[in-house]
Length: 142
Image 1: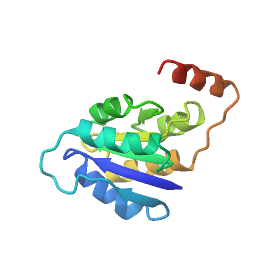
Image 2: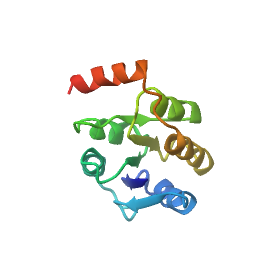
Image 3: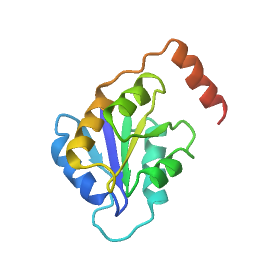
Image 4: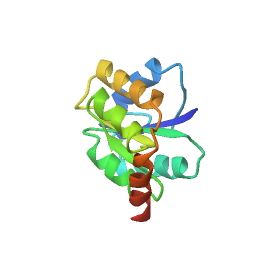
């Protein structure tokens, strides 16, 4: 499983910490590479395009709240970015929504919780069935 991770300045510190903790996964860091101010749409869209093209199986996006970067990512066709604040929402994002990008807020969740959320997201499979019909309806909106 190939996973891309990216952040703006608000998620930079959490991104760096997650890279150290998620060692059982193959992570590719797409930036930013410092805490200097950058624009979250640039990083959200760049990662999302690479997930949509199947270069990566999943993505993890981080900004201050996770809101802006998830909105930007969701503008890319084929992306279902889910903003998660706990393991339950991460599990449901995968099981029921077949989310392919996890978004979190570096100013919202601490590293312990973020690690649990990311592990849950990456280790949970899509259930399909009735949920596939619903995901197909989301895709049709694109």
